[in-house]
Length: 269
Length: 269
Image (cartoon, rainbow over all chains, first blue to last red; front, side, top):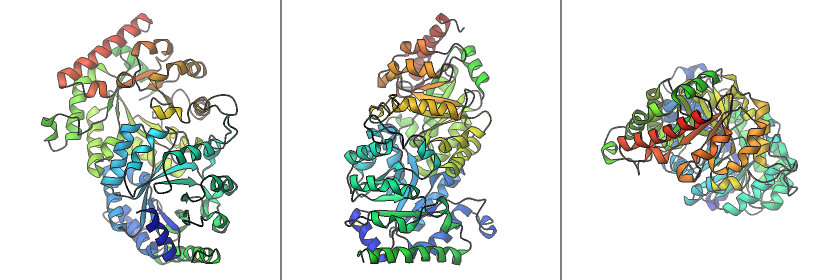
């Protein structure tokens, strides 16, 4: 899915919600656990409940890999079930040398055929470029993540007096364009968003860390990009473990409503 | 496999060779391509040819994921085929927040049941700790990699006047111990090994970058650890694409021989 279509979908729907699919067998309802493919059945239920309220889904590969080839087959079914109306992000945080990155790009963009994959920047340029050779596909680079460990390295100042995450952001701007690169920036680090938006005013940011992790949706409003909207706000646990299908739908609807109001009062729609 | 067993295996065999399994359909022989599971059959041939000369195998998950659930099933067969006499490293370079890291640890240490998994450090401590809770299992943390992009971020000086990779090394020493943590250091960056050995004298280093990437085996000799041997030298392409089974065996044997001489002249055996 290209930038124009993504932005158009957001404006049409009044939503920049991304639903994170992290199916944890310890948390999913008993009646689903007893089915033949509980990972898929749980995700299907969440997709049915939230599709009209979100523009993107983000399956987390770890929750499928934990069950080996069987889990990977469930992931394939989930991605097929989502279809082509939503932007699909494989949250895989891969990052390896060129010839291996090419294989991962093949795994995600050809075999699974998702729109985007999250990448760790530690190995530098040649670990990212192979993903950018696929038209209409996206590399989503970790810049400032939402977990406590993001303070171990990402915020440390470099010799140029800028923190590591800003160095990563600046490098990644030179690797890709607004049409094939997004960045991950945690919602619980909003003070950093000022720097980030100054350097990357229109790039899409995939923003985790709302809800359980402490980020507030309203606080992100100043960082919407006038040109592209520029934010996909991810919710995982707060939506997918809200209860039964109706309760999941209610959660997604409430967030959708808040987003619609933000987009309206900011003059987007 | 624990540290004592690994070191004992190395000394017994006179080898610290790790064979990287990166099965690329564009490079494997035609007679294997026509089998039902060419990824597995190719790896099986390489394992048969090299098992007596190496102490570790390192399947690269990307080359299997490129074929989806079918590829992951081949990976499972490969790991089963290797068995328990060799140290098995899933070269996966994962790195994610705590609850996701827990799932990846389950994927690699319970489902696939390998000994070690490579990890990217960018997300910090809570992205590594869940792996260290599995007795006898190992986290292998990227410190200084062998690719050109390692110069984009890893060598940049931080505010403390040490490059990022040294900061990563120091942090990771505080996360784990000599019994559950190794580091990736490229063979083509030997000048950095002096710093690294000073800080981590006995930790095992997984060293890629020999052969095709320019590293020379002999140059690593000063960095063997007197206590643990402390180095696993990885060869992938130079061995696995050396030709037919005999030629692959010859390559592995030659490297084994060189290692045996290094270990002998250094007084290990």
